[in-house]
Length: 413
Image (cartoon, rainbow, N blue to C red; front, top):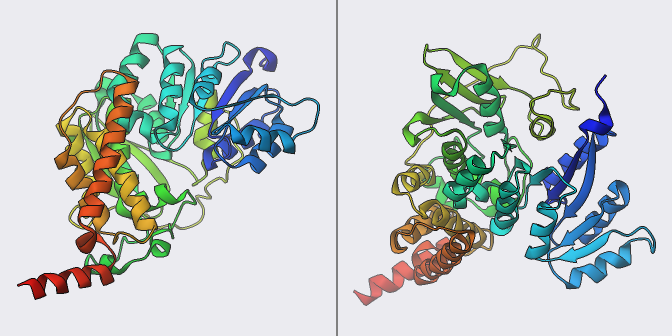
């Protein structure tokens, strides 16, 4: 019998109140004695963080802003309160602490980049669920992974599936990686109709329940584009050896084609606790609290090519990989700004891609050599994207504004 005390992993969870963080804590809950929680890092959801602290008893809790420390302290008992910290330096501190061996990196956005990178440089195991770590800093991060011998296990269902498929053979024998996409809520929507979709339409993902930005990114297929970039860095496949196929049933998460033509697929229920547990326990497999597939039931699986002309952001992701340098960092930053503008009613849905493309074209080529330089490029790209949006409000904005702009242009003639 495995000695649970000796095998216990001590965790820092970056983004504990988000979907991945909450599911990670459920995995901890389901495996008493196997995992310890050293630190919980959250944003502004103070009430949920207080509940997590009382259940999992971490030594440290980190919030985004200094003013939230007092709010959190007021929700906790007078005794037994963990050390309460705030800000980016605190996130790094708990990610490199000697008390931990594993970091679950699930903060949304570049806010988790520095802490994750520093944990990589200390040889901590990383459960990676933060896309921006590799989309914005792939070259820098993976160089550090190789240098320090860090175990970086992807948590996204597609990359986790690919990680499992690659265990079936030597990496040198694998010739193609296939990532599946649900197709999002507009899989069968005509290209012309996309001009009229609303944020509420785009937030109706057919398979997964996720945060607003990632749900919109799934609707534009930008999320799949980010996954292509991540897969390139994680598994060292060239862009042309990474294929995306639309699979609405979302049962097959990834496939790897080997030298001899064999294709290995990873299939599981759409439950993030499985890849999270895999990342925490690899190379071991343990019983997971997820639904099992009933193979006695009839089922129908579809696979078809994505429509690059209808969802141009997927093509821009491939293009950013070919451009190299900071292009994928710019891609991510511009997309986040454009998605926020769409959710605020300032952009039409197809204009998200136009803003991203224009921002990429306006930004100079640069190869960041540090996290600070990556964050500088990220900030510059965000400012440039806002300029693009403001300078094209009549063209990119809601249909009413676009109509006014067209009318004014016609009158001027």
